[in-house]
Image (tube, helix red, strand yellow):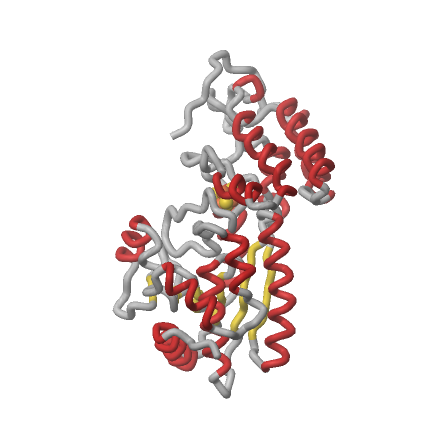
Length: 357
Ligand code: SF4
């Protein structure tokens, strides 16, 4: 018989107490990673002990369209299993999968508009792909509680940010800016080993399987944020992030997964490494920005066509669906717009090197 760890029992009691405290709807940010999975396990076990449910609790997953395909498949399957398990056990969890607006999708931005793929100093993606879809949904409520799998011992940087956003209640964090939403992090005091113990020793829900998560990880990585609990949260180099992520120079995470047997990611890994170099090739960058100022501008139309060709080739070789038709159609429309736009200038720069911080 498996035993719930002592720390988890305490947290389950906290969750029950917080749930019963008011009528504010709850949203659970879920990425499929170990932290959000352990939090979801604890919420599930808390709800199991509650008799009267008086407000909605929605589990949110944001599918950016460029998620690591191994993880996305795992999350979609887990959602389906969880839905059935919740129904059987009478747990009133709702599940929602969000997607970024067509205009904000990764390939529409890069191939359609010529955005260089993200770097540390130009990380245009996190808000557009992950934060905004969640924010738009949550902001429909006047006020809500957002449950995040944030832990203070996760990293020194995370610890510093948490200290800045602390409230009188150790489980709650203040939201940056003026948002009226409250952030509740039940696992804030969980160390890494506690998270694995939570996943291992809480039998329910069975749909969140310790061994399966352990297989995906093999070694510990961070999760890309599903809601901004602070400014500047980083999400590069995470297997629970985008396969196209070029924020980090070297994607160790995907490299490790390939070594561990996920050979279907090989073509994606090569594309990702190729585009990280291609982005910096001055030959395919405009010498004017879109606002007319002289300086390093968007990827040229010729460059964007090369990227689309390479992506479609990668899709063919990997056998994975990497870009939906609606994105391709939008990309063609955006190319036509640039072709006739008098303010769009492609004149080339003459130097050959771009440096990123
Ligand atoms: S994983 Fe990388 S590309 Fe995706 S949103 Fe995060 S920083 Fe941007």
